[in-house]
Amino acid sequence: MVAEQIDAPDPETLVSEAKAAFRDGAVLSVQARCEVEYDGRTSGHLGPGDRLLVAKPDGTFLVHQPTGHKPVNWMPGGGTVSARESDGEAVLLARRTNPTERVEARIFDAHGLTRFDATDGATYEESGTEAEMHEYIERNPEVLEEGLRIVEHERESKYGFIDFFARDESGTPVVVEVKRIQATLNHFDQLQRYVSLYEDGEESPEDGVTADDGTVRGMLVAPDASERVRRALRDNGLEFAELAEFDTDAKGATEAKLTDF
Amino acid sequence: MVAEQIDAPDPETLVSEAKAAFRDGAVLSVQARCEVEYDGRTSGHLGPGDRLLVAKPDGTFLVHQPTGHKPVNWMPGGGTVSARESDGEAVLLARRTNPTERVEARIFDAHGLTRFDATDGATYEESGTEAEMHEYIERNPEVLEEGLRIVEHERESKYGFIDFFARDESGTPVVVEVKRIQATLNHFDQLQRYVSLYEDGEESPEDGVTADDGTVRGMLVAPDASERVRRALRDNGLEFAELAEFDTDAKGATEAKLTDF
DNA sequence: CGCTCCATCTCGGAC
DNA sequence: GTCCGAGGTGGAGCG
Image 1 (tube, rainbow over the protein chains, first blue to last red):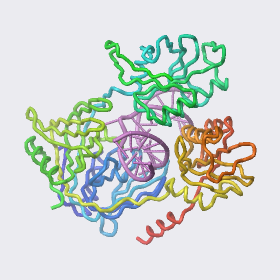
Image 2: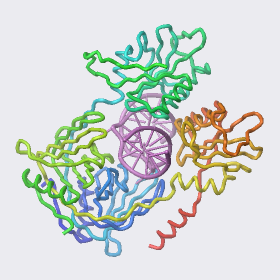
Image 3: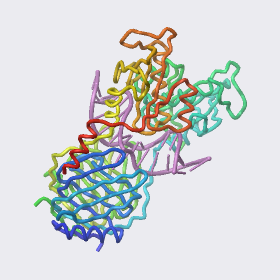
Image 4: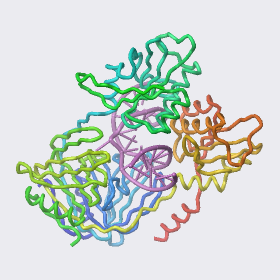
């Protein structure tokens, strides 16, 4: 019996079933009319209504309203979930420390309960991430600019991590910031922060070569950017390189579109 | 009957129950051994295992493994969820456009199903947010600096919104960026971006007064900041104002309301 | 443990 | 619709 369902459990049954589920490492789902309180990094209250409550064996606790992707209240794993009866009502309490916070659901009417002895050894395999985009650029720097040479990847600097430190055909340093999605002002900020290091001469590239005039180029690589971002780059002497598609196979010889200022 | 539970539904039953739930706007929960595919902004695959599947009437679809706070796969609201039988197995498919993406769960064994006709009119009331911190500062600017005067709140500038534009005791303009949590390098970036506007003279304060020497101060307000952030501020002539605690009427009112309960 | 940065970020607000 | 920034962001990766 992997899943056990109880219809409209009374408070006593709910509490004992919840305790058993927590003890045995099962996933508990409860459909209930309840009210919820959160206290921790902020504090909040949710009045009575029908919600789906989920408690996982790792201490995860979720309160889902009938709409919306995000739980209205939650507790990440690492803490503990407990059940008790209070004033004739079942109460589920999730707590953790660091930060210290708690979510408490007071259950007025439990419509359904399911205990789920789940086993899942699979891990999610994903592709199309920014890490893969980095690998592609490292293998094919010419999609950013003809003659561009990658010097360093993920260089730690005084003010943060630089995606790529490169040099163009004429040896001028190029700081490259890569985004998988449409670039935002914050992404422009990041590039600007890194470039300012080299402009101020507070960082020197590991290959020891410096452009004669001390110039440093900054290049933001992304599939798109709003007009405001493009203007910010332009106004600050930075460049935008449009890289919409990339091929992890490296066979397709992807045609990259570049926009230089 | 607010919730209806079916134990170990066969594929046909699962599909018809799912269709009925989607049609009637009920929340559907299924405990099942399944495999999942996502295709959209990235793409990914999750091999067979036991998961909790949740479909909401707004098109939200969640795939929860037995551990972890975040669903391993999901679809935000706005799209549609559908059910069908394929090769003798039940398949739940969630789709949306803008961006175009899909999550498909192929169900090998359904251990339990719950249809939940939930009604929830309550909205979550929260306090301790950054908006309340703004209100507090606006009413008590002296907590940042003696003699500081707030000139504008949430001023829209060429490159984004400035939390506060203020003037110090001697009339020098002060750009203030407020964070409720420990300040990060991105927060420093934001402040730097706003301050550079005034330094470049591309924005002028609405009160028309400018410091004799054109100086503009920049102040990052937060409960804490890492040493790297503090150094970035220092190196760029910006300031950090530690504001750990703040008190608001709203917070006090909420606390009173909660104790009433 | 802290720091930095990505995320299928989601969500809300403004325009 | 797009753009921008907050978030109880969460989570990975590295030192």
